[in-house]
Image (cartoon, rainbow, N blue to C red; front, side):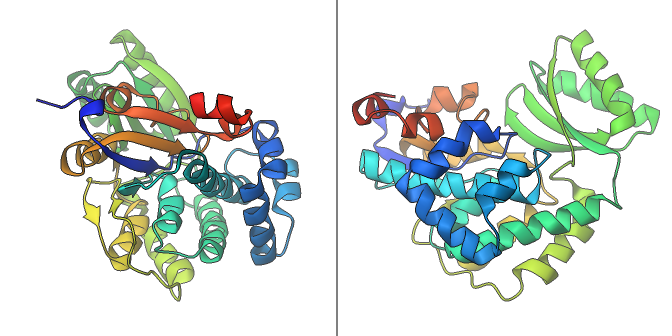
Length: 318
């Protein structure tokens, strides 16, 4: 029997996966919040350009500038939440893109190294996907229990279509990567079974066939970086394992290219092994802190640019 959140005294920080974020939704936070301003200055020094200006001018949801800005804002929000709520978290997790911020806040990577890493990863990804799997996308959908999803996947097999399960978010919430030409067919099939397609990501993510990209990131980006042992345990987003060495976190970052995210496994580890009753989701979050498995398992406190810009008393209440 699962205990209720108020029966568990532990807390954790969760850094969300990256979703499209409008510049206008975060610009004021980046300019005014003292943590964001401090980190933005460091990022500019590392990158050799004004991140704020490049992000404002960027065209695309997952450009290098959008990715680094999302990362910077997540780390800034974690520092803000620690100050605002007096947090002493027992663990940290970062599904998908959030693993980069988790590596920093746990003490595995320095902030400067992680800024450089995030930018270089984005450049490698953009270059690789300009030549490989150019038509592949990742389709997210809900209201589709596993048995219904298996029906759809069986038909994809019968059609001879390539696919890979990229994320398991909740009991009826998944993301599947496949060729873009098959995405419309799959959306129609899901709707016929009562499912609800949500959005389509390009480029795709978390696929077993991206081993060459994983190897390139390993050789061109991570080589030479220092991965210290974490001061807070990190919960791996692929299987919920508790990571206690820098080398393990390094492996998690690389495995994120080829293994699916399994959010229920992360929830189970936080809830049942660590005894977490409250999580603080630090970053612009439209998914991981909001799905049913999360809200049923924890008291969820959202630390996002909107709450961080509220007057102090209102921000605490939010």
